Image 1 (tube, rainbow, N blue to C red):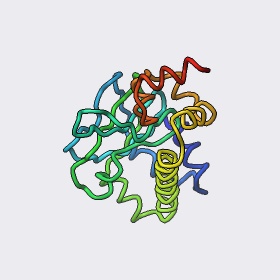
Image 2 (cartoon, rainbow, N blue to C red):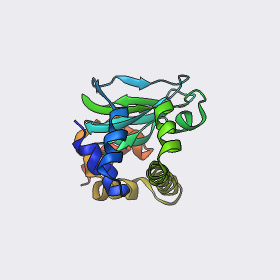
Image 3 (tube, helix red, strand yellow):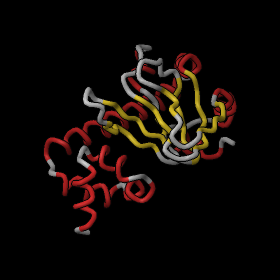
Image 4 (cartoon, helix red, strand yellow):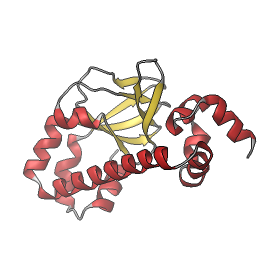
Length: 189
């Protein structure tokens, strides 16, 4: 049950089998159906999810009702309503399964308990936060410095799985473009 998570953790930190045996049981299995919301706007985001199979999407809905996808977590990635998870404030975003998904999750209380008890877990958390920061900064920079065509070409090069597995509506919201623009860009390829 923990093979993928074990490998993921071992890629980020040096950890003993004994420590792993203590940490892993804090993660519980969860199955999510396609389109199921795991966190909604206004709820507390109290779980950190590891995707074993499937895809989780983190998105916002603006005042006009348009969705904007912030992050897509496929296999062997973590996802959460991170600001809510850290601050314990109500989430301003949604976490949704985009496909039938097999997940492992840890609740906030247990996660922060591990941070206190295991210094190496703090190192793991730092890797996670650094990844989140770099990912979000690069995405923000792409919206400011690149046109739609360049963002789409970069997505095809760096994360083709997004275009291969997700509907155009989600791909467009991830690229911060309209579905019509996405259709035009796809037709030119």
